[in-house]
Length: 156
Figure 1 (tube, rainbow, N blue to C red):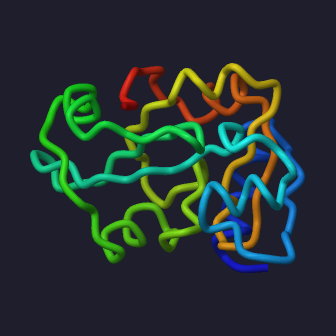
Figure 2: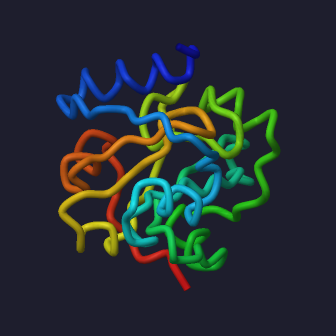
């Protein structure tokens, strides 16, 4: 088991989510791939969109429904700072995950995050579990609480 996968499993357990992490036969790097693998609606996928805060230099995380797009202008307003592209090295350094497997939970450092209200329309959502082939199911309300994210309107 990879370090990333172990970290997500430990974070889920510590948060009381105890979700079963599922290894898929194919990649789940994109929301479409994850939805197909999980057999769920595209919007049931928790997509992790990361930006670099231009004022702080640290990453910020927007967790959105798989079919939604993050509005850069709305995200910047919600974050209270201009946002830019976070490169792969910064993402890995602060989250501990590679692009395509960034989990909503289990980061190396605390990351300020926001949660798309659309995810609350479902009884269950699926998030990346730290690798491009592992995902986990969770109650979106429990996940929101465990992450400590803020509900916000940041989508187009």
